[in-house]
Amino acid sequence: MTDGSGRHIRGWGLHVLLNGSEAGLEVDTGASGLVIGYSIAQRAGLKPDSRIQIGGVGDKGPQGGFVAQVDSIRVGSLEFHDCTVQVSDREDIVGVDGLVGTDVFSNFLVTLDYPMRKFLLSQLPPRPSDASGPAETLNTQGGEQGASAAPAASTGTPSPGAALAGVASGGPQDRYVSPTMKDYTPVFRSGHLLIIPTVLNGTTQRLFMVDSGAFTSSISPEAARAVTKVRGGSPVGVQGISGEVKKLSTSDKIVLTFAGIEQRNNDLISFDTAGISRSAGVEVSGILGHTVLRELTISIDYRDGLMKFDYDPHHGNHNF
Image 1 (cartoon, helix red, strand yellow):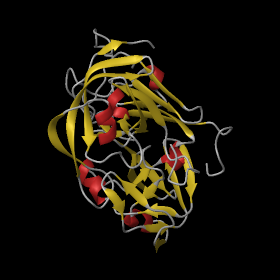
Image 2 (cartoon, rainbow, N blue to C red):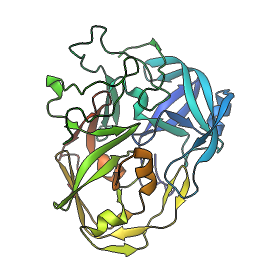
Image 3 (tube, rainbow, N blue to C red):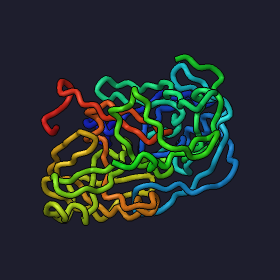
Image 4 (cartoon, one colour):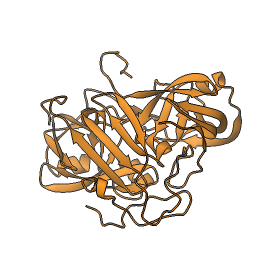
């Protein structure tokens, strides 16, 4: 998926069939559940169940929409029945058919291989105490304990207790780190948000949200001023589900370090992240967006609040 000019890739999408109607949904670690535009809902024959408000980045606040049930959703070789989607009153979602939050696949180990343009799902390692094994279901309501739809066919530096992940069948549990995941990084999870400690210019640590739906990384003015200079204005705009962000600034050189990854940034976009912080319940000082994530292979274990970021220098750029 490209920006408005058609020249720059701003995110990656999945081809999804909703009641047999094709849609291109942007894969978004910052979104929850399935969120689609009204035009896609019409093509799929979806009817409103209840009215809701849908919010995100932007200054206009929550936007109108409704919840609807989908008889079937097919993603690759996986097909799921009786799923819930959120439908915006707008024709599309910021220029795309819709969003698929990666928490939809929270019962799987999710891998986003951006350099190879692959989206992979695999079984989570079973907990030693779990005799039933991992569930292969689709969490279409998002959040920590959203209802799951059963598949019709399937082929295919926080403390150990700090993960806020819930398990749909049994409630919160302590983090389990499988021997196969010993090199994963613990992250905080607040609802669907994935939040990771990030060091700025090697001097101060703040919390950043991992958001593949954001076309660029960004930082709050307060966090930026702690390590560099901030100038008024920005060469590019920022727009989300809740409209355009009007008050933007630009920070000078900032080096972001997280989970063994280091990226140098010049002219990093800066805007107020208070809305994100209120939603998360903790102070979130910035966003790790597409400009850094597009170079990485990212694995997400929602169940245990673990993530892995792999960088291949043969596919990367000079900013790492």
